[in-house]
Length: 56
Ligand SMILES: [Zn+2]
Image (tube, rainbow, N blue to C red; front, side, top):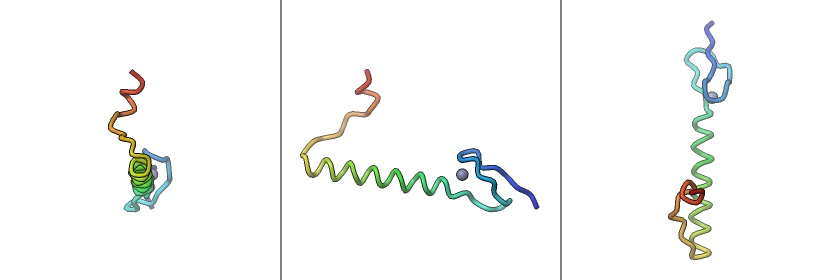
């Protein structure tokens, strides 16, 4: 039996097994995006500046 370690989350997986951390990450991102859309819709604020621009 061969094992591999996911470079993203460090989970030990069987060879051929796919780690679901990417799926989890995507789900998290979708939740955030939905939240932003709700926020923008309810407060009429526009979130078109990137966080990097706020720092500069
Ligand atoms: Zn992983």
